[in-house]
Image 1 (spheres, helix red, strand yellow):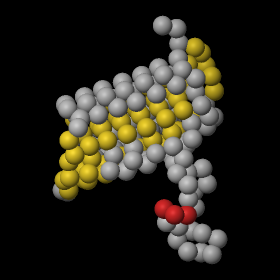
Image 2 (image 1 turned 90 degrees about the vertical axis):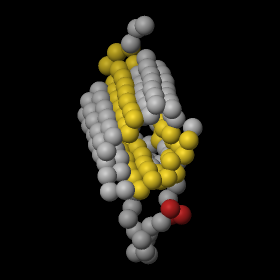
Image 3 (image 1 turned 180 degrees about the vertical axis):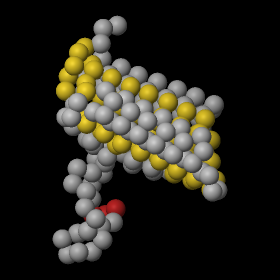
Image 4 (image 1 turned 120 degrees about the horizontal axis):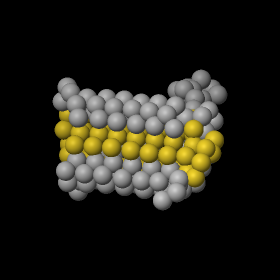
Length: 164
């Protein structure tokens, strides 16, 4: 992988490790992350430091991939998918001072190989979505999803097993 440091009006790519054949469309804000071979990142996506995207993934427009999210190979992330990395976010501490990185604990999320996540899904932190699982559009995923399963709804619930 090569590391790109670039900053212009249309796109911000700061210290991003980018694999071969990666396509990144306009208006992407990515910094301190890695995007592996053959992946595509749509417009208006943010990928924060420490996030990882595997090979041959498709990240659709308007998606937010925060620090601590790890997406393995061959995953599809639909439009407007939101990931979180803090179960109890606050702007300020009890004393009224503004919170900084030292005032909260990062909780990682793992998206295994071949997962598909539908548009506008929200993925809470601290979970694992198993290989080849499918998350329905608009779902709110609050707990682990087993491999080869379909989940949907708010909160996301098991719909069916995927047979291969």
